[in-house]
Amino acid sequence: MLNPDQSETPIPVPRVDQRCAADWLRLADTHHSAGRMEEALTCYQNAIRLNPRLFEASYNSGLIYQSRRQAAQAATFYRRALQVKPDLAPAWNNLGRLHVDAGELKPAADCFLHAIRLKPDFAEPHFNLGDILRALKRPRVAIEAYTNALRLNPGFAGAWNNLGNLLKDGGNLDKAADCFREVIRLQPDNHGGYYNLGSTLKDIGLAKEAAAHLQNAIRLQPGHAESWNNLALVHKNEAEWDKAIACFGESIRLKSELAAAYWNRSFVHLLHGRFREGWQDYEWRFRLPNWRRIYPYRPRQPRWDGTADPNLTILVHDEQGLGDTLQFVRYLPEVRRRCGRVILETRRELIPLLKDSAAIDEIVARPEDERMPGVTADLHVPLMSLPFIFGTTGDTVPAEVPYIRPDALRSSAWAARIDGPGLKVGLVWAGRPEHQNDRNRSCRLETFLPLARIPGVRLYSLQKGPAESQIANSALRDAIVHLGPELHDFSDTAAALSHLDLLVSVDTSVAHLAGAMARPVWVLLPNIPDWRWMLDREDSPWYPTMRLFRQSRCGDWEAVVDKIAAVLLEFAGG
Image: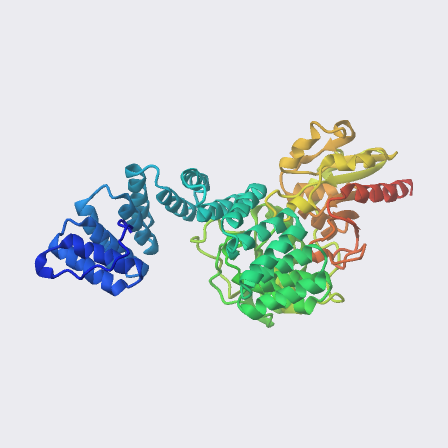
């Protein structure tokens, strides 16, 4: 309210004919403060009727209507106030909020900017402008807006919270956690602060602290299904499997349509080889709010359920990472047996590698724009739904290899490049930095130094991406042949692999490629691996030529490489 100062003494009700507009305004403010909104509105209207230039009465009427979500009436009174006092920054700010609620972001931003120009030390329009910029996917300037709000009002808990969410979205987890800690300091009973802090600490890997904050969030709001889901993830990351399953179950009990809880639970089931339950939960991925970011194109055809019909053309489309595609194209021969024609839609970089597969009648690139015309087919099916459709169990994984073969001409061109005596060992030490678990699955080139000390071993780098730059300043620089610049697509990588005796790799698409080609491949796994590698085994039902080397504790790649070096020494001698 613009007039917060009221007398505690009861005010006599003015007579309208006395034309005491100021008295009506004072009485209205008293009713407003006491929560008697109908009486307040009546008094404000009397004040305005007697003196239309009492902008305070119009503004405060707007506040009441806005609190009641009566946007049109609120906007009318804010505009009346601004006609009398155009420099009334709070009215511009609140008018902007009304535009936001109506989804009118451009006029809302104009209102907030105008409020800032009129009153630069007014924190709230900076905060509101930050919300708009965040919605418009402009994180850098949104961060600047929230920072301005906090400079003007360091106790603005909402600004700390939203700044933390932006920093978390940008991968700046430590600073995001600091923001959420500030929310909790300012508002010790703020459920969202505990939830956001616990979720962020989970991603950092501080499991004990994350669990404590998520438990506080649940204490404050026991029915918040998302808190139970994230607490389950903490337990999963600590290999506390029964606790994880119990928390996922509670999350689903509270919110039966929470797709993330089913999706996350699928990983625990699949890790333990409970394929039937795992594939069923895995199907919930299509209901995730961010799924369109992973696969933004909506096929026009109905979905195939596995029914055999020789007259059907089936569009099979990939959906997630390159390694996922390389792993699951093994199902295409079974699709081909059940229909007349198979079209595979995949990433452009995989087309040269997969185009000659006998199970594929046509291969097309994933469209770059969802508005592009789709492929003509009768039905579609997501590639990673095929294990669910075919009822794959641990005993029925289609594991006949090789199901991917290198191009003969490219392979022969690489023969001279990878030649000579000794055991030829390929190395890949990092995956895509954008991968959500890359901080756990990737390591540094220096970690492999013990392999370079083994007599008779020649190392070849198949690394691509930013991690290639590690070679230049590595102690392994002179001990490794860097093939990366010559690997233009996966066909080149397959051709190079065909001449190597062994691939040693972290969990990347190249490891999948080597397994699909039936090449010997040793994979380094974090202590909590991706679901497909399961638990407590050195082999994989997916790839007969693969051997798995697992961390015993998080981050300890050195012990894994020491074990690989010992086995490789024996392997090289043989």
